Image (cartoon, rainbow, N blue to C red; front, side):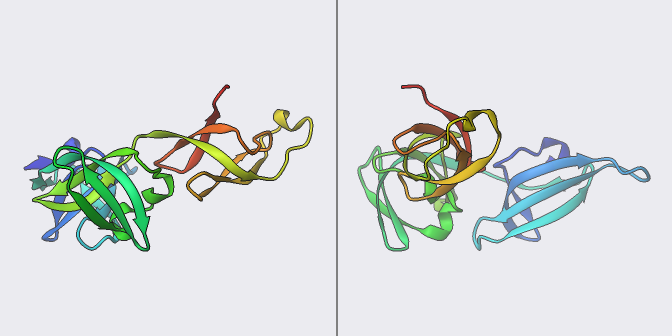
Length: 187
């Protein structure tokens, strides 16, 4: 059993007899009363996200999760195909299990598949990925001084906001947790 003080992002706990993964938490001390823990939880079996508030010190059962190395092969409609790096076995993963992370998957990219009691519940992406810009409006001379942004399409097809000075062919770093531009990679 763990208490609210032990919470970490990615931890899987049992809430209302359902397994939930902690995606965000914050300790909150209101002006009056005891401290509480605000938490965003993702149901690992059904996929929905809920916001809950727990009293400080509440206890929960922690479920053990395992991680296995997989390599992304290709997308086939609403399924994504991965290969186990140890057994070379291929598995199909429905898009719902990827939780929006499919926007940053490139062919042959290695990820960690997360399993809860032999059931795949999601994937762990690297925090930062390098992508090429394949489509962007041209910038105007002098745009590097402002903090204005525009939409650009990266090589996986996802659109993200980038500074105005980014152009087609540039390589950039993208934060996979937020989908935000981090920096341009020097050539």
